[in-house]
Amino acid sequence: MDMWPAFINATLESIPGAADKIAFDKFHVAKYLGDAVDKVRRQEHRILMTQGREDLKGSKHQWLYNPQNMSPKQWREFKGLRESALKTSRAWAIKEMAMSLWHYLSKTWAEKAWKRWLGWALRSRLEPIRKVARTIKEHLWGILNAVVLKVSNGPAEGINSRIKMIKVRSRGFRNKERFATAIYFHLGGLQLYPQGVEK
Image (tube, rainbow, N blue to C red; front, side):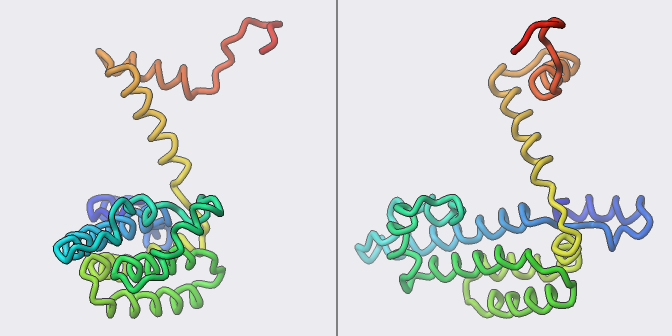
């Protein structure tokens, strides 16, 4: 789930043993950290532009792109930026380190790794990163649950994204029933061909 207090409190009140079941998954942590890296980039870009430097010009998407989805060419082009002494480069490295901490099987080892990461992030002198690190520190128990339980709401977020696209493409619906029908039609896996007809 998301780290919103309302979601957490409602779950803790409604489900027995929820503190061991609530998981703040990689998707949400990545979003918070991606936003923090972008804030650092924007702040640094403004300062560099006043000095007549264009180091970060047009680089927004390179910092936000998942390295696993980059082509070899994109990775080579990004090399100069990611290995630079820019604050944005340091923020990106902190984010990528956090993204590598989801493979642990033991809660004890996962906690040690996350606490080392928190130390680095909190000492970074990059306020957007420090703010996210404080949020992660406060919700570390649920992140550790997600690491150990190996759960993610990525598939649900994907379906939600597809539902939003249905709404956008149709320019809205007059009532909820028509919207529900469109969702079932596009995402329900319904067999719409007459019997005996092959796709």
